[in-house]
Image 1 (spheres, rainbow, N blue to C red):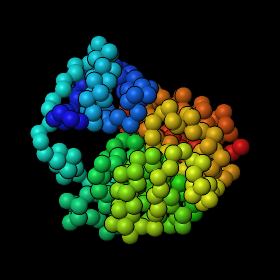
Image 2 (cartoon, rainbow, N blue to C red; image 1 turned 180 degrees about the horizontal axis):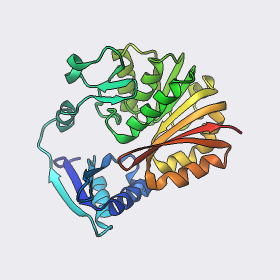
Image 3 (cartoon, rainbow, N blue to C red; image 1 turned 30 degrees about the horizontal axis):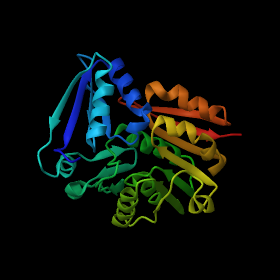
Length: 289
């Protein structure tokens, strides 16, 4: 942003917060907007949205979507001229998701010895492991690993690369990630090196990239993106999976489960599990047709 960076905060009832989040997701001008939604006060039923726009136009669009609900209290706060992203990450605690332990450089001295440890530097990419969508994906993956193995794994919209790196560190011989954002691809490859994980990340839009097709079909596909692209990619994700392969989908609100699952059930998938973290959902689907 040409002006000082801002944080947009909205508080209100869960229904209004989820409706606002869905409106942000559905707005093509806000694709890729960074925000979180969580329950702030369980006793009072207060939910909170925190958004970090990267341009003046994006800030105006997010604020408009939040205020359109009418029931949310919306505030815009200027952020100090400092590396606020790095500062906020330094205060994030490690995250345990099944066998996986996700941590930052500031927590190197707190790493357990009996977990699959993932040191993740977010930089400008999404996916520290703290967001409910990422945790849901890791929990789902951990449960699947208790009974089966996945030799070839694809991570669509990889962000920091945490999911593909988790696959590489648990035995996948192919762990490939894609992202439409070049800085994210660079950060993900740096994180793979940091974790000594044989995961690879490429800049690609969609699943028709030559490198992506060349390593398929896959045993498992992660797609932690947003509900609209999850729906639009349903056929491509099916094609990239072998029969019996698994898709772990997230980036969607609980209120968007029906829309996303319907797109996959109609294409020959079976829904095996839902995982909920805060307002977010992760779906585990298996290709059966």
